[in-house]
Length: 112
Image 1: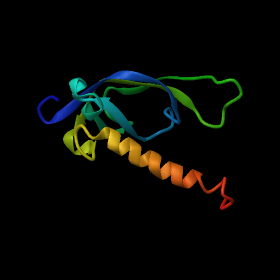
Image 2: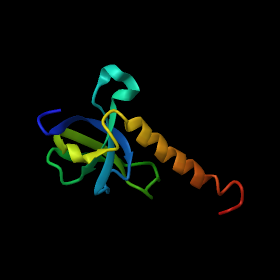
Image 3: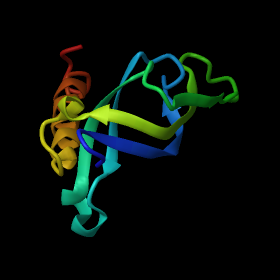
């Protein structure tokens, strides 16, 4: 944290649709000593200063969706871009997985 915002630094490789996304949900450690309770979810816009796609990866025949490396160099994120609450990013992640599991269960039981 710095004043009225967070500052993100780091990179993440192998992000599906990363090179094409306009808006991203990014999970970052905001309090490493709290383990999973120290992870916060952020809404990041492609236009934020310091955010970039370093490379678009060339995959062996898998060209249906672009994959790349995302880089964060002193990306300033306003407090209002925290998704849910500070330190509750794992809850955000798990709620998305719960929804995904429900949607994907339709195929095996013949609903899709």
